[in-house]
Length: 497
Ligand code: AHR
Image (cartoon, rainbow, N blue to C red; front, side):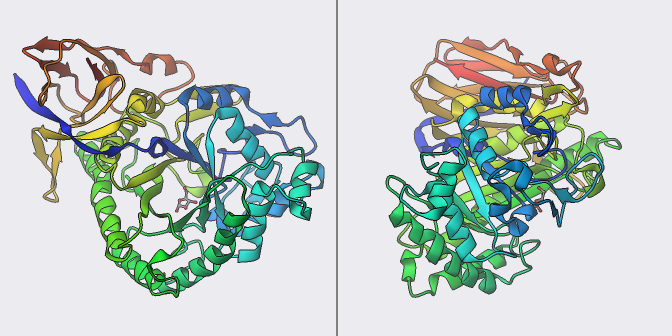
């Protein structure tokens, strides 16, 4: 029985899918940086973990945000440059950093280490400056250290630290969650701070040889806050040409949903919470549009993902990485595709070991989690043109009145034809899905499926991680219509020619 129909409206292009929506976020928190990406401190054998660097390189990450998170608004970047043995040890105001659970920061991993990591794995860096406890001068100096090619003391310090050429860092975040851990500011207060920072950080732009800086402001899931922020920004003497390239918000879901205690009803609720991201994207885009009438300002979701009750400060925000989390990631990536006209970046939190990470480590072992497989499966969408899809799907009515669509999909077109991703969000049963491409009669489909052999609450471990790799999926093609059966809790990627 066919119970879901996907129609790909091939001629209805939404926009190019910014590859940056497959971005990542890494913070000085728990075992993300130390132990996860970098091992050792100043006086030991130090360096990048090659196994993690390899896994991240294979994923072809377009952009990586650092150093926080809440950590960013109490980070003084000059603590983390120069000879490692001379760098000061500081308290980490928000997060424990090491195996002893001490909230301390060795500064062994700083700006040059992060930017080298980005070079190794071929990714664009995105730095978040300190607004909460810093000042605009410190932020502008950071831009100068990273990007300036002239004959100044800061550019020379970069050269002394082994980097003759400027790094050309493009993305600069002005603070993090400044409505919360970044200074508890009102929207008007943050807008005024933003303007001060943008004046100095933004002015560095004209000193750069070949690079445009892109400035990023923090928004909130409270959309009244975003509206007031935009109003205040728009009322400056810059008028509507204010220097703001992107506005962000963070969307975490599943906070009341313990992985250990889950049942099928809770799975549904969790997936519905993940899908709320669509409403947030629409609402923040509307807040932007109401003020930014003559310039494009993109939407960035620069922290997103599952945050279960297992993730508390004492556990270093660690939680098991299950198939369920991976399904939610697929659903969210479909939403990003459908909103490619406004979405300029997104960064899943966090890269290694923390929250909804893609890579997990234990001692000398490192392995990909199920969500890593989803990012891999969705990779062909990056840089393609997203096209409208309509999904006629069965739904499940949840206790709070939400109708959870059980099948989701998105599609894009590019040099290799049309790529369609389809997710069976139903944790209870399989669905047969028919896919038609308006105006096209495809003759061939090459398809892969994830998680067909796994229960939805299974987590990857070092021993079973390979079993989560994609498998071939049978897709029949008749009169140009594709048909596939998707087992419960699975994700498929279908290349149509
Ligand atoms: O990712 C963990 C924390 O969540 C970040 O530091 C903060 O920005 C958010 O609240």
